[in-house]
Picture 1: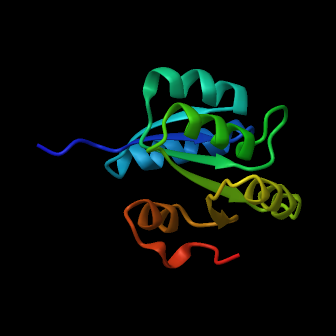
Picture 2: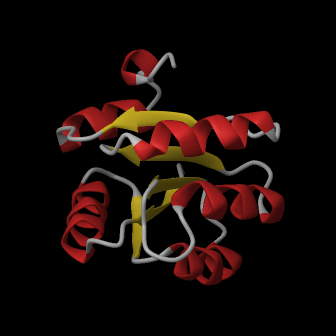
Length: 128
């Protein structure tokens, strides 16, 4: 019996987080939505996700900070950053300087592209 990958989706725009979680649930994943970096940490502690898909720029704790802390809690958790804002590149560079590497996908993207990426089609991965 195969188990569904647990995905934690984070975006401070609730409609985006909720919609992605619904689509992922309908596509064979076990997805849960979070609406802030702080909420990611609370949920990740109990959910123990296999994958964190998070927007980079959020109010309060950003997605990179949340990803770093989730990785400290759950070293095997795959962290995928979604970003459509130019500030994300600067934040990502700062994280890389501190030794943190993340997968990043540029927004906007079609949900089918995200599903393919989560299933291992790394053709969408940003080479930056």
